[in-house]
Length: 219
Ligand code: 5GP
Figure 1 (cartoon, rainbow, N blue to C red):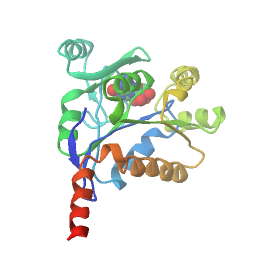
Figure 2: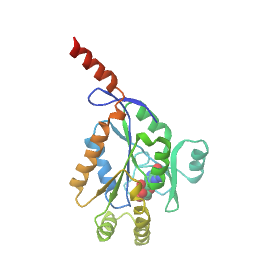
Figure 3: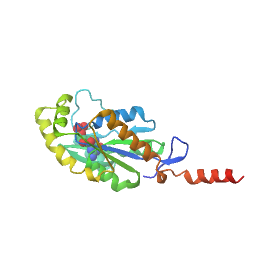
Figure 4: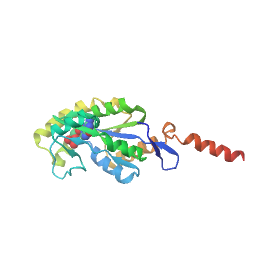
């Protein structure tokens, strides 16, 4: 996806797809919320899922909650940019809102797993920036899963065993952040996004900008 957009320094820039992955409980949701509230020009991709809604979740905000039939229709109609099965449920990224946001000059934030990240990278390598968030320890991860009070003990056990599998894909990511402390982890993730926005390759307006500067200098 190579969509033109405007950067914040007024040099035309291509929008980027900023992916955060981690085992559940490593702090990814908190980091996403902080990024969205503190980084202008970033829009969350709301995934479709067949899993049931958890207490406190809002349809259309946290996820688009759909049944399996509707999900299969979305897959067939090529409405999803990527999709995967996690914990027996399907999750996928609706294509249209992502394309609309990138065309409108926004960057898009994705909270998706390694399978989805692989698919995005395959489709748009140059525009994907991926960050893997690691918990500082297994005990910390378990504590966070219990403190969320969202899942039964059985689901928590499943999440813990899946965490190890999920983590085995860490080396496929561009950046790794270890979440010892949420403020430090946030500062690190924010720095990654800021630096990636300044990448030369992404700032397609630089040629004209520099030419203009040179013209001014020669006058
Ligand atoms: P949860 O059920 O805890 O909200 O999410 C379970 C896992 O599914 C998380 O690792 C999350 O990143 C992943 N996930 C959420 N949405 C998507 C999606 O659209 N695509 C893919 N591939 N994974 C997703």
